[in-house]
Structures are given as structure tokens and as C-alpha cells.
Image 1 (cartoon, rainbow, N blue to C red):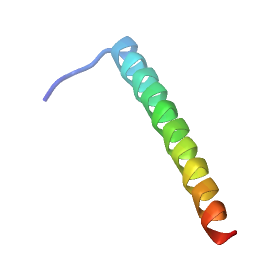
Image 2 (cartoon, rainbow, N blue to C red):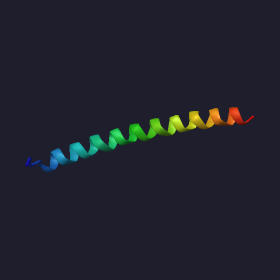
Image 3 (spheres, helix red, strand yellow):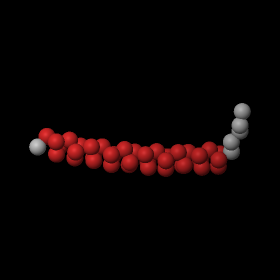
Length: 43
């Protein structure tokens, strides 16, 4: 088992949060694009 210092844990946590934010933003953008496409098809 690997032992991490408090600083290492904080760094890993901040990196994971940053990656999650990027993915959520990309997913939201994709959902907006898809919903715009659905609206055009419904017209």
C-alpha cells in the first residue's frame, strides 16, 4: 500500500476536481448541442 502525505492528497484531489469540472462542462455543452438538434427536427 502507498502512503501519501497530506500535500500529495490535496494535490491529487485538486487535479481530480479540475478534471471533473472539464468533463462536466463538455457534457453540458454536448447536451445543449443535442437539444438544439432535437428542436430543429421537431419544427
